[in-house]
Amino acid sequence: MKVLIERLAAALDTVLALGLLAMVVLACVNVALRYIWSFSLLWADEALVFSMVAVSFLGLIGVSARDQHLRMSMVLQWAGRRATFAVRLVEYLVTIVVCAFVGFQSWQVVSRLYARGTLSNMAEVPLWLVNGLVLVGLAGMALVALTRLVAALRHGQEVDE
Amino acid sequence: MTWTLLLLPLLLMVMGFPIFLVLLTAAAATMVFTMQIPLVALQQFLFSSVNAYALLALPFFILAGDLMGRGGIAQRLVDLMRASMGRVPAKVPLTAATSGAIFGAITGVGAASVATISRVMLPHLREEGYPDRFNAGLLVSVGAVGVILPPSIPMIVYAAAADESIPRLYSAGILPGLLIVGLIGLYSLWVGRKSQVAGDEAFTLRRFLAAAKEGIWAAGVPVVIIGGIYGGIFSPTEAAAVACLYAFVVSFAVMRVLTLRDLLASARTTVAYTAQIMIVIACAGVFSWLITVNQISIAMVGVIQDMALPNWALLLVINLFLLLVGCLIDPLSAILLLTPLLLPLITAVGVDPVHFGIIVTVNLAIGLFTPPFGINIFVLQSLSRMPLGTIYRGIVPFFGLYLFALLLITYVPDLSLAGVWLLMGK
Image (cartoon, rainbow over all chains, first blue to last red; front, side, top):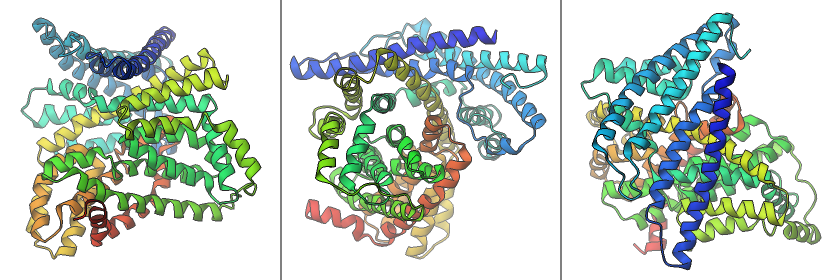
């Protein structure tokens, strides 16, 4: 399961990386159009911001799978292996609960936006889709934490060790 | 409410939980246990905190910095700087300080400045033998100068909140910003001498010309960014995108160092950094909003009012208060929230609103690199994988420098107002 998630996360990261490069191209094209043909892609700014939101929240799945979240590790460095293991178990549990809880709130917003069929102002992107990125990111983090928790409980030790 | 907003995050942070989880858990617990507001606000603030055009500069500048690093542009720029400085001690940290301040000023996003300068300068600082503690303090603190030097986004927000003139605030920010850069430069010189990091060969025209020939394309990057923004050609975000394109074209087609595989690797790295940083920004947005709606800051202003202090003590207390707020809330929210509350207090004792704007901005700039939630710290940690303890320890002397500058700025109003008189004539 862990390997599968890591592979999926790596594939998703590649797609997001290509998306990021496309964002750079779009921003540059918009500048060029403005100066060369006095014409602007009005939807471009909104599309760029939504793409950044996608990179931010979908990228979290890879960050979680590789355990790259920013944290203050000072105190844990001094703690023993058992204490560290126990804290990590609590962390996985809190991640699952909090991400599931906030994800549920996110789901409510997304389903409401879906029912209304609201579109963004300029790019006319369905807003449920853009807001849904938060939901996918949170669900992905919860799933990664769940697999880590199960693995840690099964093997009785930190899975990454 | 106090335990969920103050004690719980502190406990989780000490336990080494990811920063986003610390903030999100505290926010969720506060909303569930102590407040009567719809919980869907959690999603809305998470989304709206990152759904901002100004933040686009962050991934673009991270990508530009990474491409410059991989493609050899950064190396050539540093070589050019070294060749032009000869035996000047501490020339690498001086280069980092100067370029960080310029970058911060032109992007207006302190975190983007830290991202770019760290990618480019950290390997050189390490190569020269500077300890990571110093490197960390230098990079996170110099990134904060960008919000003091014009064009500064927090100053625009202050101008709106205080009904002040933006050009007057910009003029007032120049000398204080330069003062801080100067102090960081002097400290870097002192560290350079103390660490006996040698300035290498003496300056020779031949060496300089050779480095200039090699670095002529590389020097185009700051020209594109600075010239583009100040020439009114593009916005800071667009400048970041153009810098990415320029860095790629020069490294790929002219220098022939970068490959398409490197480009994809660079983009993948940027995706990871962006996600790491943006989730902290998103969760900090929710946390910041909760501090605001729970009127914690307003209660603190009430306490200051009740103290009935003399002018100098009032300014001191307000500075301490702003420093504390800056550690917890993002600068823009803090300005919008506190300016209407503090301005009447401060103008009643004869402080110029423009001068006060600079005091507020410097205080909140300090918050960008001070624990627990200074965003510059997390950007550097994400890019360098330095232990947070090393970064915290490294910040201390730079925090001292900023405090010294803040005292000067607070008690010598002319330091800020001279810029207004010189540039605006009144």
